[in-house]
Image (cartoon, rainbow, N blue to C red; front, side, top):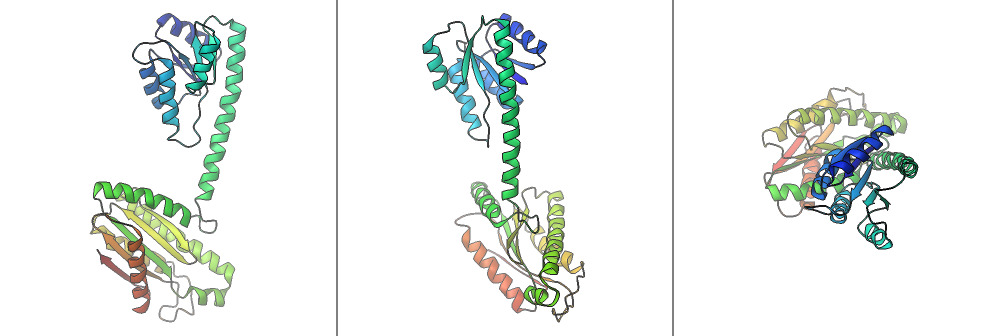
Length: 313
């Protein structure tokens, strides 16, 4: 385990640090509560051994700051054991109220200290396994099962977060709605299994374009499956000159797949229609942007499909 050891006494730090190292743990030291909070953020320890009475910030206050920091992170909980020279019921109550999990006396016998560390090691290992499992479940819940893209639920949640940040920054947002042309006819002609495979290939092509956008500096750009054969491409902080280039790149990327589609009469292969709206400065509410992008997508369909229609608001 990585153990954050907090005490204003150099002798205590040295003594407990040596005991922890002898047990195979990695001690990280802090001399007061304020330093402990900083080390906790930097080092992400598996366990905290916290003194109570210290200058600058005492142990109780430091643990409150640590728990507040953990509350901003998913599935974060780190065991905290208070070190105390006065082993009293009042200290136990105060320790628990401050967010600690237990306390031990600084004069604890070696065998008892080793047993406590073994128990904490098991708890830390289980906590790590649970955190990984929860992250995996959250990731799966954010993905579309067919295409592997982000799903509508993730898109709505992430876009709400981004919109707030963009409004505060007066930053731009580009929104593209993408639809596979004559997809019902494709399923009727080739079957739903072929249709599923076609959607996966389309999704992969869209992802490649968005990956290229990342390389051009749009680190927050992403593509999501909006529903059925429709996709959304979100381009936060997109420069105005890049927006139409990305829209056209999406259309071309799918056209170049050259997937046969006999019932897409004009082209003979799978094509996309793209409708988009660009807001140079985020403000107001987000929903009208989707309505406008949908209207431009409809316009692309009406004007012959396999085309891009965009508007700047």
